[in-house]
Length: 279
Image 1 (cartoon, helix red, strand yellow):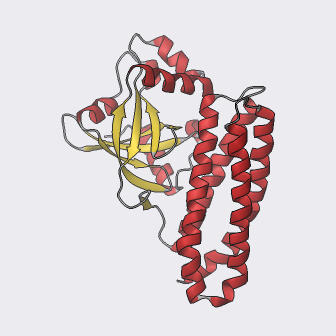
Image 2 (tube, rainbow, N blue to C red):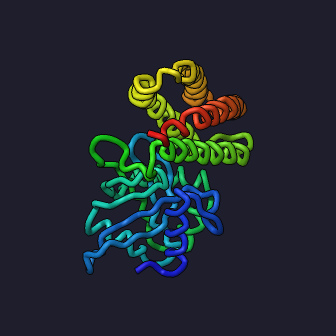
């Protein structure tokens, strides 16, 4: 059974689609459900995570530098099939404990993003494990945590807003540098945004155009904005992939993308949510 603190975080996380206050406010947080190594019962734990590009995220079994691994780590070693809730989607994943150089590179990225991980490692003699959670859900990113099509749009949009706000804050704290983990965060965000807009162009917009011809001007504008935002994403990718990365240039591109994207999301919500909720 989760302790009282964890249970409070779990309930708040689920009620607010991934948003929590207090100790975890402003952190990348997910709910990890493992199968008890001894009991066989499901156990859900809030854990911080790092984007890793593609369909993987990383979690770190720090236990705040305790001398032993946390219980959830022993559970996923015994049964690597886990369930992940990120506030937007719930999906099945396979846990892989990173080894040797791959683990060290991932942990170094984590330390670069937050020196607290190094402090935890310094407190314990054990090598703190880094685990990749790879999405294995068939046919998409998982079950969307929304009860209507209109709510689905808002939930996905708010997830992009939160991630972009985190990236902007991390860039502001980075000073004259742009670390490897922050670069991964940006590229992962770009990929997710591209996939979302592609899905809208290929599925949701044709669905709405067929049933609501009066929305033609709105859908035309949204498609044009998708193309414009795609160009901004390409510019950010070029900056991040440059041989000599310039943090200042990356910050400019992120701020430009942020402003344009917020206007786009707000317009789409205003125009489409009432129609989608009616459907």
